[in-house]
Image (cartoon, rainbow, N blue to C red; front, top):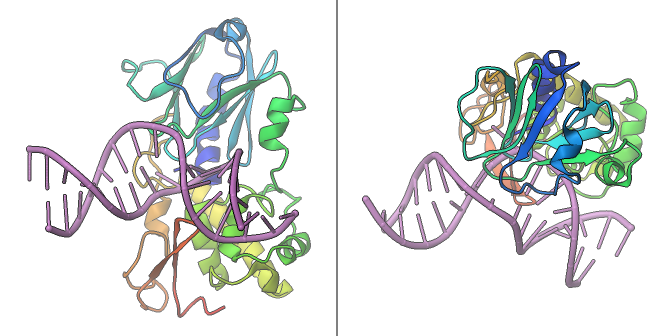
Length: 271
DNA sequence: CACGGATCCTGATGGC
DNA sequence: TGCCATCAGGATCCGT
């Protein structure tokens, strides 16, 4: 599920509510992608200072250290007071003075990792290679074009790679390429500067719109208050194979790139 | 060393 | 109803 918009929507839905909380207890369910990296008792008594986001990671700042939370393919965070009993896919729980935070993740591709600081080798391993934040000032059309010139693979793959820009996953890569009129199979280094600028703008627009719409809920995404997103209803190409293009009515085409589905319009995206 | 592919895991879905 | 194959929002690791 979670690309940048879903992670940001999650953050917005609980960051203010958890800030200042005291951690009373922490517990784990089944193993996630990586071990927590500290004892559960280490977390007890710490305060939650706030929640930031880097790429698709949530960074939960604590009075000593921080937690890096990744939602993988199927993860979602919930935070509140009146909760049902833990379900079998709740694999991490923090009971705090202001509510209980849970990570539910059926496929367990997600992770919760403790780091003593952002310069901790553990944090650096996960965050160190991430590219520029697409919704920050640092994401700039000229340098984005320069980054694309270094890559000889299909532009869709480069967007998913997270080195030229972070946070764009399978849904929003297809959507941004449609908005920019660029075919997903085009080699990244062959994209001209003006067309890179179009794509740069499209990425910002698509991600911003998706955050406003509460993210995309295809199956199981919900924010920390349990609310679903609605961007999937606005999708121009994603998951619309065979359906008419919303612009020109040509049937949307579906292909596979690197084991992932890609959707595009052969008429609106010619190169 | 840039790239493509296999891989981790569970659940939903569709064909037979 | 069951069995099997395929697919799903991610990202790392490994071989070429």
